[in-house]
Amino acid sequence: MDFSLTEDQKMLKTMVQEFAQRELLPVAREDDRNGYYRPEIIKKMAGLGLVADMLPQEYGGSSLSNTSHAIIVEEIGRVNFAYVVSVFMVQLCLVELSLLRWGTKEQKDRYLSRLAAGELLGCFGAVEPNVGSDAGAVETTASLDKDGWVLNGTKTWITNASIADIAIILAKTEKSEGKGGITTFLIDTKTPGFSAREIKGKLGIRATNTAEVFLDNCRLPRENVLGEVGHGLKVALSAIDNARFTMAAGCVGIAQACIDASVKYAQARRQFNRYIGQFQLIQEMIADTIVETEAARHLVYRVGYLRDNGLPYSRETAIAKYYASKVAMQAADRAIQVHGGYSYSDEFPVERYYRDARVAPLFAGTNEIQKLIIAQHALGLNAVT
Ligand SMILES: Cc1cc2nc3c(=O)[nH]c(=O)nc-3n(C[C@H](O)[C@H](O)[C@H](O)COP(=O)(O)OP(=O)(O)OC[C@H]3O[C@@H](n4cnc5c(N)ncnc54)[C@H](O)[C@@H]3O)c2cc1C
Image (cartoon, rainbow, N blue to C red):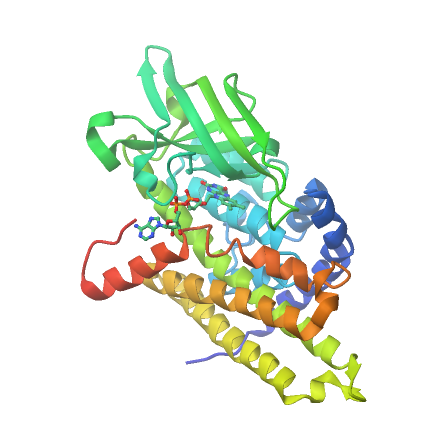
């Protein structure tokens, strides 16, 4: 087993670190305060080939491995987790990789290169007001008439939705077929009948756009189906598996940021006539976070290895996401403690890490769902999702 990064991966890590320090860090606090998503950042990331790191070059991608993707995402998450969610989980994993795997040649040719270049922004709508973890229960309907599909329903908590150019939407096409009757559709968000309203006042990842989506007799041509009619749940589950891996890598980034901030503060803050880093109880908090972060990083790299080698990865992805999200929350909680009262304002970034980390056990399958997947694999039962 080789745990070392290649020379190319070391250079990639340094390049992304420099980009994040230059472009993400200076505006992170301001954008978090204002709940502002910066469209120019995705274009700058695209210029470095990051927005489509795993896409083939024929579609404007960088053809990088999954492990290299994890390295990139960790470094972005280390500075501003909001962009892990909006760019890497949603734009890349939920939208670009779904199109790559399930799209027709015409759909790929029309959208992929422009998504990779950051010219188009995408969103992915599975969740609804009454439907969350049980994605097979979607209430949004799609019916076929002589002119094509007509969609009606509401989606909620959809990242990028009120600024997106295209949306992938899950809808029920055949009521009688239960989970088999779901289909995914590609929608140009300018289509009449598609509208979105931003959700304000989020706990964390405030520099992301999150919105409700309303489909009111939204008419689509027949060819706007993504994948096969009735097989939408397969599309959704493969997309969520990709996003789950990315979420885990981003959580390692938050945890690493907590270590960086805690070490820096412990070396500067003095109490009882010495640096607080000299107190063993502070050292214990830093040591525990280092141990857990390294363990989480190796779980993420294991998923990267499995994906790169065409091996099954769903169980291992659930393990990595479940553990890394817990590590990120615990790391942020300890970093707050190391910083004492100063942690309680955004003068220091640790309160943002604490709020941002909290989305990780909720999105890309809640942590309860991850535990069900892990246990059901062990018990030989059908996974819940
Ligand atoms: C900031 C943010 C961005 C998001 N972006 C997107 C997006 O871009 N696209 C999208 O489609 N969705 C998005 N979501 C929605 C997210 O995927 C859902 O919140 C998530 O799937 C959980 O669904 P729910 O919130 O309806 O919770 P529910 O499913 O109602 O769950 C509530 C609680 O019950 C538990 N629970 C549910 N079922 C079981 C079970 N079988 N066994 C044990 N416990 C169970 C859950 O774990 C949870 O603790 C986003 C959410 C947030 C917060």
